[in-house]
Amino acid sequence: MIDTQLSRMYESLGISKDVQMFGAETESALKPRFEEIDRRAEYNQMKVIKAMQDCRVSDIHFAATTGYGYNDLGRDTLENVYAACFHGESALVRPQLMSGTHALHVALSGNLRPGDELLSPVGKPYDTLEEVIGIRESAGSLKEYGVSYRQADLLPDGTFDYENIRKAINEKTKLVTIQRSKGYATRPTFSVEQIGQLIAFVKSVKPDVICMVDNCYGEFVEITEPTDVGADMIVGSLIKNPGGGLAPIGGYIVGRKDCVDRAAYRLSAPGLGKEVGASLGLNQSLFQGLFLAPTVVAGALKGAIFAANIYEKLGFSVHPNGTEERHDIIQAITFGTAEGVIAFCQGIQAAAPVDSYVKPEPWDMPGYDAPVIMAAGAFVQGSSIELSADAPIKPPYAVYFQGGLTWYHARLGILKSLQSLVERGIVRLPE
Ligand SMILES: *Cc1c(COP(=O)(O)O)cnc(C)c1O
Image 1 (cartoon, helix red, strand yellow):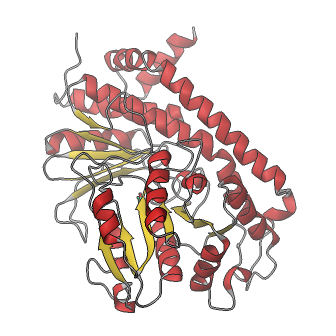
Image 2 (image 1 turned 180 degrees about the vertical axis):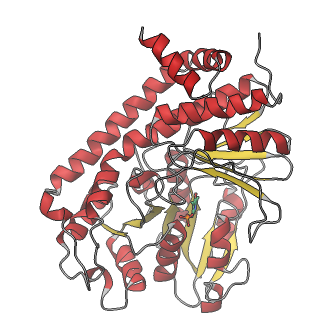
Image 3 (image 1 turned 30 degrees about the vertical axis):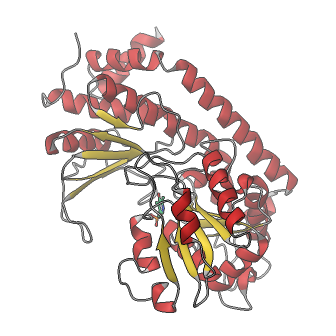
């Protein structure tokens, strides 16, 4: 009974019987993996609840403050919860951290001084950090402030080049930045365990170096975070995993107290640090978003794995592949043609709760060397924990997609993308 009604409901959303069947078959083979994801989500849910209980979260912490925000009890408690949950001494969790890039910039520029050197032992960092660091010339970059940069690339198989990392560490090396997620590069994403090994190696060469991890897209994918394996700071965006889809803005820095304090002095002003910064009524969303984050991340992970398996079965190259262990929520699918990429993105858009009637088209976005297509029908602008996809229209014609506040929405999005490819004759379902 429910199956018939569910099938009709999918049909009313434009998903044909064939596509439904193909999806159901693919999903049934994924049951054991989904159970594993659910167990991790359960662990992480308990971890968040434990942190909230230990910090005695109460409804008084949801009250808004304005102006300077001195003695903002809710803000301070939220920061204690983040520190407790991610096992750091201290945390800076603020709507005044405007994005992941801003949080990373604050963490870096707060902890580096003129004459210091920054090292990335994992190859080129995320695009937006190139200008923060000064890899690409930019006004106000770390380079302009006399901070030099060095990079050790990964070995061809995507592992750490320990020999070159050792050579790159010198008397000036002050901070090592490790990006957990591949972002939009083709290298693998690192597990927390791998990051722990890298940090141990770096500290064996130079014990007092600060190890910072760009944790974007990685939170709650595993049951540990880089702070559990020696990271001095982890940094991320609240409109990705840890905001649980409810945070309307914000970033976080969690870790060693002295590192977090220096970041806070950079964010506000020397002498002010964490003492100022009104929460403007956002505390409840930030608490509640963190509370929901483990299950939201689980839904996004299921969506990524479902998509990988669907498109792998149809003969497309997917990264990570259908069976690989996951360390972030990003899925890449190579369609090989512009039409494939466009059809996929238009399908994702058509499944959205918001702006489903809009048809995304490629456009010449500033800063990109090819037209880019983006699909997102999000409650929070630019939020990439919500189901979203984007792709540059150039070879190899790969689309990157991530998110989904619920597994069911992610599932619909992927079926809708497949429907769109089938209807345009780009994909033929097996008989
Ligand atoms: C998203 C992301 C960033 C930057 O975050 P924004 O919020 O987009 O500024 C940095 N690093 C990685 C790995 C990311 O995925």
